[in-house]
Length: 77
Image (cartoon, rainbow, N blue to C red; front, side):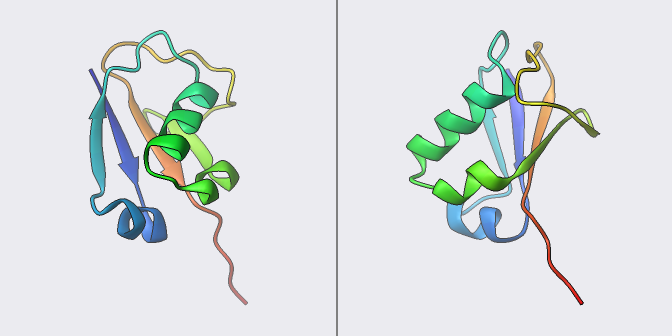
């Protein structure tokens, strides 16, 4: 089982900051698409993703027990 973490507006849109999902063997891109379709959350496509607190490309394969974070873009001035 894997833990998915959501921050900022994603957390508000989904209604929680953490979801459990059996994602071992999937790529980050596949998980992103699953979250997008399951929660009707198109803005997740612009998020960066991290596995176990390290940024990773979408073709990275997830292992059992990994924690996946969805990090929305930030803006500031």
